[in-house]
Image (tube, rainbow, N blue to C red; front, side):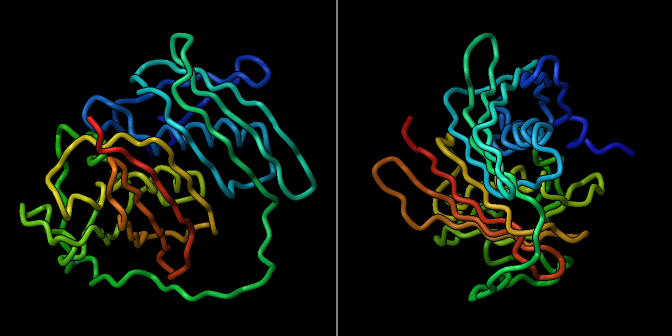
Length: 260
């Protein structure tokens, strides 16, 4: 079976450095494609130009909403060294740039200094967590199985806890195992943690950065997202993604706006 993620992030290089793809509505929030999905689409195209290397960090600035339609991805190598290679991408529809992306890929390596103070977020077993039922108006919710820690799922019951933190088990609904290229999507796949403080409202993303820390093992991912500073019309969401073996595989930071 071919995964929806692989189908919907497929790219074709039609000219040197110019890729074409189609933005699918399976990853929408309302009528807008999810920002993490667009980031994964860009990562796929950049990776095609940097063979033999693996994504390490990727940042997107969202300039205007994208549509579920054909899209062009212009990839421009910035620097290619022995260990690291950096490239820029522009996601363009109808002649207008929607997203600007900068990413660094690296040669796979397992050596280096180790000093770890954090740990996977505390979560009950999957069966003891609160299942998030898919919502028709949020198409991306149909693409994942998500089980929230009961003490961070108040928004699902209409009773927010007042603590802007979400902890959950996550995996693809179609059984696809996680990999490095899926991590930018997963970093933006859960609801914003501010829902544990206030009711739902549209929170456009201004910028999203994902640091890839390792290749995820098969199985459920253990995720934690939190917002600590909400003022002046802006808020951040900091994320950690841990794999089934208890290894940190990605960190993320997202800046959103609550301005109308």
